[in-house]
Image 1 (tube, helix red, strand yellow):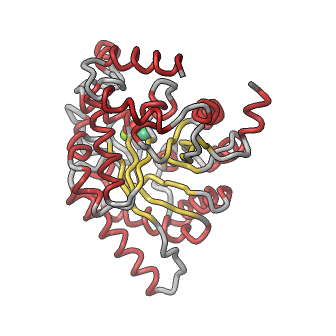
Image 2 (cartoon, protein in one colour):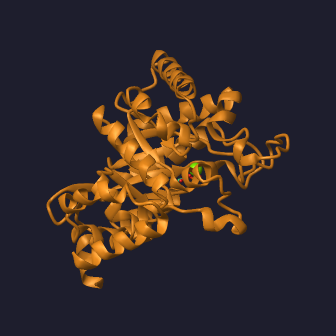
Image 3 (tube, helix red, strand yellow):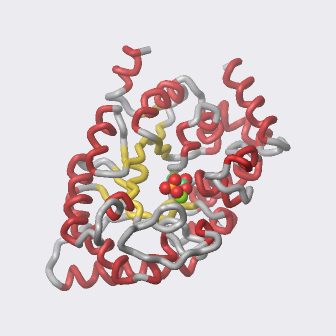
Amino acid sequence: QKSEWARLKHEATITADGHHVELGANIGTPNDVVGVIDHGGEAIGLYRTEFLYMGRSQFPTEDEQTEAYASVLKQMNGKPTVVRTLDIGGDKELSYLQLPKELNPFLGLRAIRLCLEMKDMFRTQLRALLRASIHGNLKIMFPMIATLEEFRQAKALFLEEKAKLEEQGVEVSNSIEVGIMVEIPSTAVMADVFAKEVDFFSIGTNDLIQYTLAADRMNERVSYLYQPFNPAILRLVKNVIDASHKEGKWTGMCGEMAGDEIAIPILLGMGLDEFSMSASSILKARSQISKLSKAELESHIETILTLSTSEEVVSYVKKLTVTE
Ligand code: PEP
Ligand code: MG
């Protein structure tokens, strides 16, 4: 196994029937990129920028942010790098940003909602991203998008800052894709509408599961309801992938589910284009995918989507991968 993984480290991720998918990593800081390359990552599917804002006493400046984003892009050397704009609120707090206490922080003013309210803070981050963009293959995504208006507003701010920088003679990339995280059920349901306007989707199952089953992802007393394989989740995921492909766009997944051994065959069969996981899971996943046939898995998706419970899905997939 060790030697197989050592060989796979330098190879693309190809199924047994010759289909390529991209295996990326989730990171929190520029220091994490070394590990991504060391584990053979083909991309960064999620750079959680909130860590840049945490553990300090004031907002990071535009220059500080530009430096961090440029560092990640340079280290990735042209490989796709998806940077998520600030996702604060919910369980993540900033000591220097005193926000009113909320009864339900996970349903409150977090992520893109906060950024659209604190526009100066958001514009600063967008400018830093734009300035860093010339150093690599940058893709930007907005977290917690619930409505099309939110995406349009965020995209408009991005375009405004881009135009301003260009006017000032600052060099910025013209090929930055702008996409969204799909982690709220409304957006998963409306994926066909979003797909006409976004460049890509990245499914955030950590939140999508908690919001779909209304089960707090941190609350152990309802953890039995936190079901990645609930058919409701699978139907939403399939809807998002299909909607993106109809418009010639791509869909990734950056929630924990993307690196799960049982989930991978299902996601592969559904046509997921990019899987983003912790760097240490990449080679194991690449090895698993290299032994799976996409066409074979595709033929089981319709049946899987008619199953009634999470348990049925898990046992179906287990049987499938044993006989293959
Ligand atoms: C998710 O919600 O699936 C996700 C990747 O984002 P986070 O875990 O940072 O909320
Ligand atoms: Mg999330």
